[in-house]
Length: 144
Image (cartoon, rainbow, N blue to C red):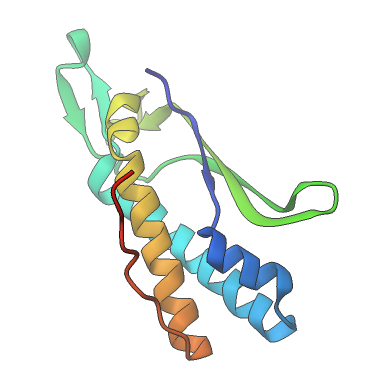
């Protein structure tokens, strides 16, 4: 499975607060969103992404120079529907220490998608709550 792009958006309670909040609230949420993405990219580079090379990709190394990515910020899902979110496109190639470019193991990226999403949401919520003096409450999951 090839994974070359991801979408980062705060959980619905946070982006609704962003959409309906005042200027200060929006700035706090956007700053938390920005920092969470930066931290998450570092985590992906340091802990998740590997470059495969050699016969059948037998050798695997972390990308020593990091990943190549392009990021695009949007403020609407559709015209008139506010939704703070960023699209992140990752190159499927990474440069090894010897200077050669090889494939990023996209299956490894895909396997950690849920963990990355949960980590991103936790980081954004923690920062927003701390700065704005809010609190989160665990959701009770009921049968059905």
